[in-house]
Amino acid sequence: MNWLKLKSDIKQIAIPIIAISLYILLGNLIMGKICPMRMLCGIPCPGCGTTRALLLLIQGNFTEAVISNPLWIYIIVLGMIFLFNRYFVTSKSVSENITKILKVFVAVAIALCIAYYIYRMIYWFPNKAPMIYDSENLLERFGIIRK
Image: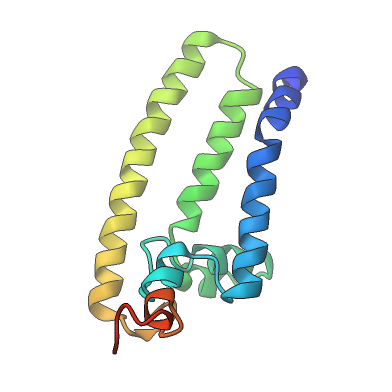
């Protein structure tokens, strides 16, 4: 394990992690949600349900996590491959090959996310969680849009 690289990475991402944590905390306290699209417009984003899915997974509710958003599986696999490549692979050529594979996986993940979002918007929106309309959005609160 490359401890020096890990230590350097932690120093570099400390401030962004703190900022993201504050955003999540304040979003939950003020709006009761963390999704910027749902906060602003009231409609779910392509990633809606991912946080819920990860929390359900931690609680051991595998089936419910898959129903909420099965793309968490991809996120975990990509994260593990990235961490392995970043901190354990020592060969530059092997690391470059893994990086190429990761880029393909990320492109596939984005395509799957968009396809699954379209499916859920057609068949689930606005009646099945997490694909529900949130009337407590900022555009409605400030009278920019009306029901």
